[in-house]
Length: 249
Image 1 (cartoon, rainbow, N blue to C red):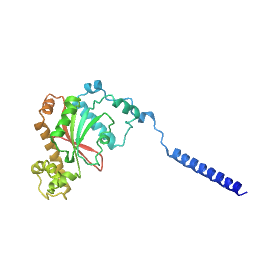
Image 2: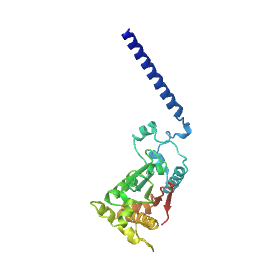
Image 3: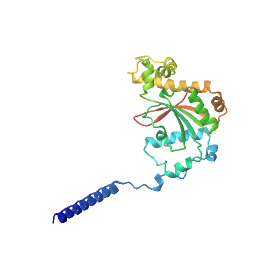
Image 4: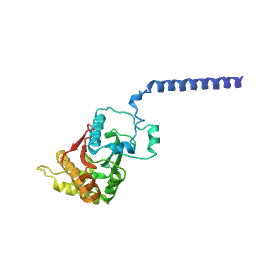
C-alpha cells in the first residue's frame, strides 16, 4: 500500500511538472515576434564588384541615410546566419570609421550596418597614431573602402580628461594627442570639463585635428583623397538622439 501511494504521488508530481512546462512554453510562444521577410536583409552583401562601383560621394550619402534610419528606429535585421557564411569568403566594406572607445557609441548600429559593411577602428578620443594610420591605409588602399569617417561624440571622457590634465600611466601619452585640439579651440568663457559648451567646442576641434593628422602623416590617404578615390570626413555622435552631425570644414 505504501509503495502504491508513493508511486501515485510520483506520477502526480510528474504530471504537474509537465503541465507547468507546457504553460511556460505557451507563454514564451505568446511573447514571440514574427518578422516579415521585408524586415530581414540577408541576400544583399557587399561584394568586390559592388564596392568597385561605389563612389566616395555615394557612400557618404548612404552613411547619412542609414544614420537617419537609426535615429528614426527604421531598422532591419542584417546579421543572419546566411550573411555570416557569406562574410567568411571575403570582405569589401564601403567605409572605415575611426571612433572613440566609448561603449555608448555602437558604430555599426549608428550607421545601420551589418557584418561586412564597415571597418571600425577604435581608440579613446578618436586620435590618430601609427597603428591607426596603418589600419586606415589597409581599409582604403588594400581593401577598397571609399570613405574615412572620424567619429567623435558628446560627453567624451577622453576629451574631459585632457582638459583636466589627467596623468595616469599610458593614458598620459594618449591624452597628449588631444592637447593640440584644446590649444586650437577658440572659446571665451569657462574652459573646464564642467562646461558642456566648451567640451563640445574641443570635441569639434579634436575631430578636425585628427583629420589634419591623417592627411599630414599618411601620404597614401592624402594622395587617394586628392585623386578623389576616397573622402575623409568628420562627424559627431549625439547620445541623446543617435544623430551624427557631419562636420563641414
